[in-house]
Amino acid sequence: MIRARDLGLPFEGVPGPHNTITDVTSTMVGHTTMISGSGPLVPGRGPVRTGVTAILPRGRTPDPVFAAWYALNGNGEMTGTSWLEESGFLGGPVTITNTHSVGVVRDAVVRWIVREGFAGGEPAQNVWVLPVVAETYDGYLNDINGFHVTAEHTEQALNQAAAGVVAEGNVGGGTGMICHAFKGGIGTSSRVIYPDNGRPGDNQSYTLGVLVQANHGRRARLTIAGVPVGQEIPDLMPFDPSKQKFPDEGGGSIIVVVATDAPLLPHQLKRLARRVPLGIGLVGGLGEHRSGDIFLAYSTANPGAAGNRTQSLTMLANEAMNPLFEATVQATEEAIINALVAAETMEGINGRVVQALPHGRLQEIMRQYNR
Image (cartoon, rainbow, N blue to C red; front, side, top):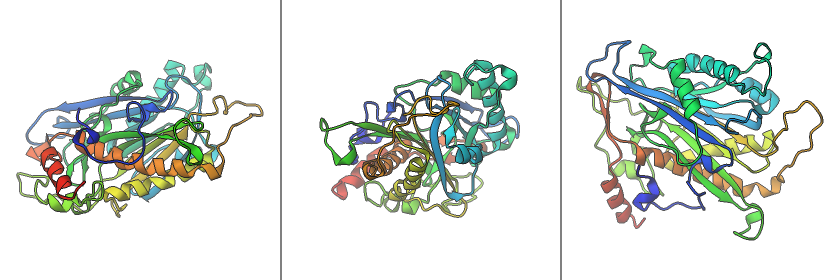
């Protein structure tokens, strides 16, 4: 798998060991990728280009994390956010899929939590859960109304979740997604943070990671490290043999999950989520009318905080949050570009083709701009 840094693209900030969201202690990621069939669309049969991505904040430990969410533009869905906003806790995994599979994935997560004892040993009849499931629309390439995602696919993503390297591009929920009119999908990145603008070795460090499902943006606005790449590559637009023009209007949506081990409370995590659009904007996203831009941030610090007695908590001072804001913007930007770089050209329903961002041309353009 080729990533943005492999092409020599310049980024600010210090990444974690894997430069992924799993650099945040205990966070795991799993994918189920569904690719089958070719040729004309036959609803219910395919072609299929979709999947499920699962993020487990504390791995398989059933301990809620402090969390918050924010929507730049709400033309999309993220279930479970009413209680997340009310309680300040995320009590289970975050899953991401296509728009019309949110319901089956949500139900599958409930069954998985009950069956796996993920609710902390509660008797099955006492377990209740409001899962967080997010979506973006993959109907340009995928038989989205064929409802191919099942409970088994969701459970596979949850059961396969692991720490370490995270697959990117045409995988999981990002399998059929399009970003800035190139092939998009899943991308991730991380940053190591030293509060109070300290330096390595000076004080406590924290890690912040981001995972995106990128299915948004117009081609002309695609910007990489300040370079107008989209304007330099006006060709290679999505192709439909029926000659229907791809609607390059910035619709499509992006889901972003921010994780950190810094001890932040829900109101502070809301502040992180509100910085995500700055990273999207660096790559050229605007949160257009038809784009669902929805973000969630959580902290793995303060284990046991959801207990039923008085809790003693650790909180990073608000004055020390600026490096976290910067890390959120940097990691969001790089995660989107990682999704673009890792994705491969894909043919979907009715012979439609979405091209990958061409690595060689990208490098040449960056050289022309001295980047």
